Image 1: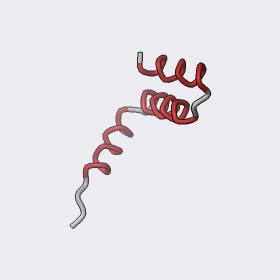
Image 2: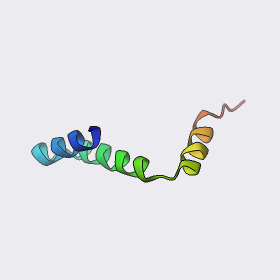
Image 3: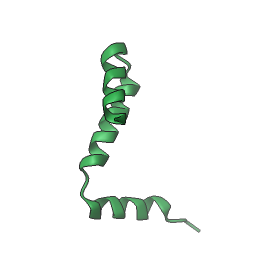
Length: 48
C-alpha cells in the first residue's frame, strides 16, 4: 500500500523525494530475510 502511494505521489508530482522513497520501499521489500537481519544488526550497533 505504501509502495503504491509513494509511486502515485511521484507520478502525479514528479517529486524526486517520492521516487527515492518508492525505490527504498522496493529494495527493502525484495531484500532476503538474512540481509534484513544483518542490516538491522548493523544499524543498531552502538559505538563506544
